[in-house]
Length: 203
Image (cartoon, rainbow, N blue to C red; front, top):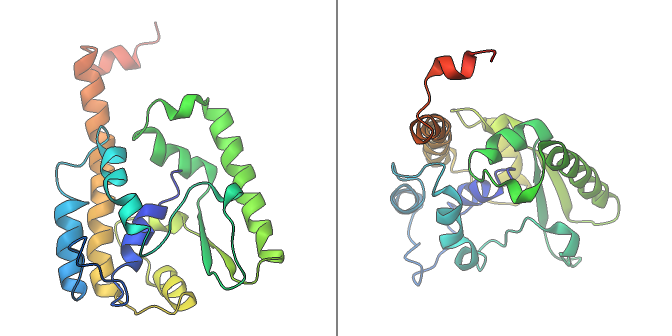
């Protein structure tokens, strides 16, 4: 959770291999960018609906690229290719808490410890799974999609380089994340009728 895996899948789905007329997700990269900006990263997306929007498409698009958060129960065959997207516990927490304030009933400490342990265990899988790779992804949380990061993942999966299209999606994703940060602070201030001085006060 909070590792940007859903977002990475949208970047990879720009490859011409992935087509689905049933999902109205077909054509060239331009058509796919239009679909994603209209249905996934549209302007009304924010902290209070982020997770719900993500789940609208998750299962359907698993037919094209399978995605999961729960690697511990995932069976990986020798001919499967699997990429684990990991981010630091601190970034994972700050990215996720604004989108799910209940945080799966975990304290901040428990969440960050679980993330660190999970990252370590999954990285160890590389030692005995031939097609399992780990890609560190803290660098994703910036407005410009890092080309070296992007090139590494598409090359490892033998996919097309659609960087010029992917960076458009990525920029919008990042902007919506920053918007969600501002929205949740504003909405909580309004909900509890707070002023900035109430927060800064030592009492």
